[in-house]
Image (cartoon, rainbow, N blue to C red; front, side, top):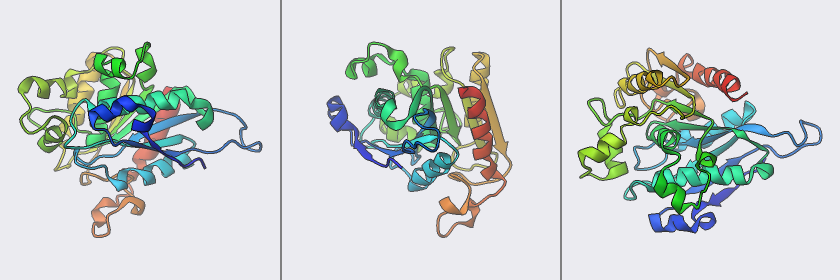
Length: 280
């Protein structure tokens, strides 16, 4: 396995101007003369959650290893959190996908089969990249002349932070924009308002009784996707707390059996089936 920790500001010095401390962790199978030699694979760039305050271990390496075993080349972006604010996280997400496409041969990546996957606030990062991949400030800073190089081919959003309105997870938006963010900024990053016709297809899952990030976040986003005719798939599980991750013992906190839910754990298989259809 190719497991490396890549300091993104070292690769993209402009990120230092945005107070970036981002690191990209790689979990990729090595080339083998016995197993599909030199064959490029679909890949997943994972954004852990944490309310823009930290990036959760539970939604990082275990998820990467799970999907690696399913046949994907996987990568985890430990993006910079508060007190760094927008556009730092979007800049880092764009730099990460640019890096993967530029180094596709090394990591055996198919550049036309790169999905982003985010959890909670990490899903907001993935959603921002999916909706704002051609952001002018980002493209200029990263010297990108063809913005499409920053566009994911699919997005998988897990119990996502979406809206800054009635059903908002307020702490995430404070982490992203600061405690004194104005209404214009809050509306701009309320992603149901950012859906566009040329964004990638989206897979979402949520639990109906999520008490932290209400399921209405996913419903608002799906309604916006449908209005723009964006291919999407939504799964709402009846029970389960926020932050389930894989919903298996591998990602359960020591004192929380509620984070193990065999039924909800089916989301990874559903996601794999959807990605196989969308990316091929």
